[in-house]
Amino acid sequence: MTLPSLVCRVACGAALLMTAASAGAKDYFLTIGGGNAPPGNQVSLEKNVLYFQRVLIELGMVIERHDILFSDGDDPGRDLQFDDPAYAPPEANLWLARLFNQEDGLRDQFRSHQVPGVRGPATRASIERWFDEIGSQLVGDDRLFVYFTGHGGKGDEVNHNIIHLWNKEKLTVEDLVTQLDKLPASLPVVLVMVQCYSGGFANAIFQHAKNKDGVTPADRCGFFATVPDRVAAGCTADIDEEHYQEYSSFFWAALAGQGRTGKPVPRPDFDGDGRTSLAEAHAYSLLESDTIDISIKTSDALLRAFSKTKVDKNDQLITADTSYERLLALAGPCERAVLEGLSEKLSLTGDERTKAARELGEEVKKQKGEVDRRKGERNKEFRAVAGEIVRLLKLRWPELENRWHAKVQEVLTSEPGALMGAIQSHPKWSDCQRLHDEVAQLSSEVLNLERKWVKTQRFAYVAESVALAANLSGLADADVITRYEALTKAEARSILPPVVTVEGAKPTNAAPPAGGAIPAESAAPAESEAGR
Image (cartoon, rainbow, N blue to C red; front, side, top):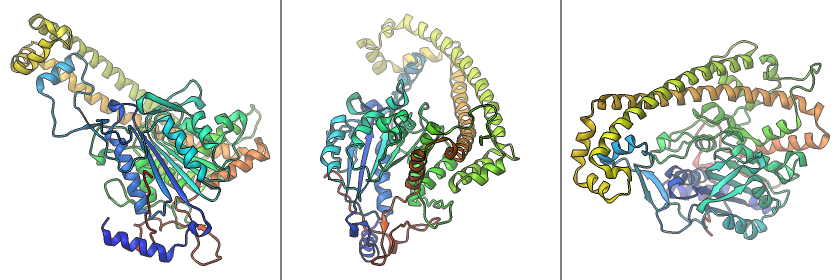
């Protein structure tokens, strides 16, 4: 962004937007990210944080403060893993690594992260300190957004799913809820979490993170890359953001109207109200992301805790297999857009569309299984050929038995030509190359089939959510229904704060016009106090 355009935003924002600041309300952002150690702290996590900072600027957010806890904080150590396209491992090193099945990390490079203004490392102590020192200052009229971009793990129960923090620390769903419970219950809190098994953190809407304890009275909602029992896309050492395919890339792009590389993105407006809500950004991600993610939101978790699609064989409840026409009539604008959009992408037609999606999923699953089987066979053949070549190499260089032997480094440094000559002169060298390439190709086919299968699961999941929502009123008590209605309203808010354009007028969750770029004259100034 150029300085004149930023100045214009500040001036126009001051003139046109009497934001929540007029009522004393302030927006706070807490970003937590990075891996638990340098080999797991990929550059994409750094770039996710930088992209989010750009999104807030593009949206013209008036931010009270944006605190960032990332990997090792301001330690100058080489904590970040990246893939340098200018670096290629020596051929002898590459093939020895392949033959010994130790290729992981061979191309990795490391540097210190470049996230500006970090408040501290992403540790339990830093998080707890933030909630004690900063969170304690927040009042009910403020808003808090928490964005986590890192790695996650699966617990023995959903509420024990974890996020991995720096220096191999962990934080469970219950631990996070303990921190969130320190905030005023009336304070709107939005979670956006993109780690593996992130859906477990949808339990933040329950008392003590346990659905059996009921729904928390706190104004809290969230959006998560995937369901509680699946890994998520993302986390790469690739420095080219054009290749990034992960949940928050699509979520933030839908809100900002601009992708990671600056390409314009039409803002979704599925309900036609002229703005893009958080729920619409989530629906956009479900529709447009070509990943292995089955993304969910907090209302999905509530529905699965308190509603059903079957009680007994005589019930008359709505199910995911209810006629598609009726499901569409029951669906909200976001769910309707997802069902219609995925129908087109998957070529689903007719009135038994969920059944068709399920059957297509089973067909794709079988195809994937067959490709996986062939991949396993080829890999077994490759390992057998690699073993034959390795045995021959060890006859000439017995020190290869231990990769830490000084002679190994000497051979790689002074005799790489002789080493490669020995490898390439083996009678099965050409088979080794062919099998390696076939395994790589089959791996790509498996991933593509997984992505197609996931789209069928997204369809079935959203269809089930529509059915569960339709049945909730007849199955849950009044308090749960009230909390569900409040939760869906929270999910349907804008990331921008309520604004008052005329003194005394009713505040609305205003947002830049959906479907286009952000006009400079309607943007508020960006006042980040990162790292304060």
